[in-house]
Amino acid sequence: MNTARNSLLPFVLVFVLLGIFFVMMERRIGNQSRNAHIIKVGNFGFDIESSSPAPKSDSVMSIANELLLRGKDSAAIDLLSGFVAQAPDSLRPSLWVQAGKILLQSDKDSLALIAFKNAVAGKNPPREANLWLAIAQNGNGTSGIDRLSRMLVLAPDNAAGWFRLGVLQRRGGDLESAAKSWRKALDIFPGFKDAQFNLAIMEMGKKNWKEAQQGFSDLVRAYPWKPEYHLNLAQCLSETGKRKEALAEYHRAIARRGGNYPEAWSGMAVVFRGLKLDDSARYALHRALDLRPE
Image 1 (tube, rainbow, N blue to C red):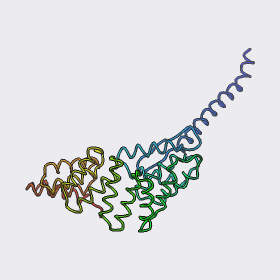
Image 2: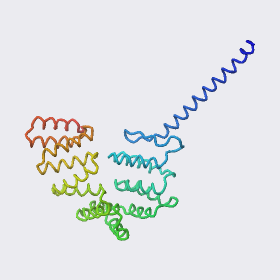
Image 3: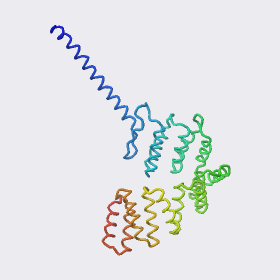
């Protein structure tokens, strides 16, 4: 009896070892598959799809939109730029249009053009795909302005088209027309933050501080996580003599940048100097100088 058991023991050990080997291999393959589907954007890592052979475009767009909501525009643009440059076939036409809109508003013209071309070439593209492709193909300069203006006669409710027209007009030096186009975009879509931001910056350039302050106040209420909105609002408040309110906005801008915001520290130093708080002014100025690149 013992002899029979001893003769079976090597076979049992072999089966046990084989079982352990296959389990370990399965886990290793699973980990490799999972790691293969992590997209790195700056300091962010996203596991966008670990169960399929390739990342799903819906997940990429969801991540990009989440980054935009968090105020991390540059990370969202980097993610979309890399994804569009690869031109994956899995991206649905409607998502190509969505990606193209974001890229176009961020002055990524060539990548936006790729996105809209892929949208038009896809199966059952949305009706707006051809319109967006035409907008992206306008390019810069007077000819682009003329073509886009004619197109907006046919599609006057296209807020992004009016915004794009304003960008082209500003590049051509026609600031008055650019402002009118951005206001038209805001009339169509009141939440168009890029148009509102450009208008507020334009008012700052004209030293119309109260108008600029109103614009940035609206932006801060709608997007409180955007440090640049707090910075510009603080500058407007400082120019109109509201120094304590300006300090509060500079503090918020710095906090949202994790302390690394030399422009805000410089502005704070100016305000402290106006309040005759010399020690605080020197400290803020030193922080600004320490944070600026060599």
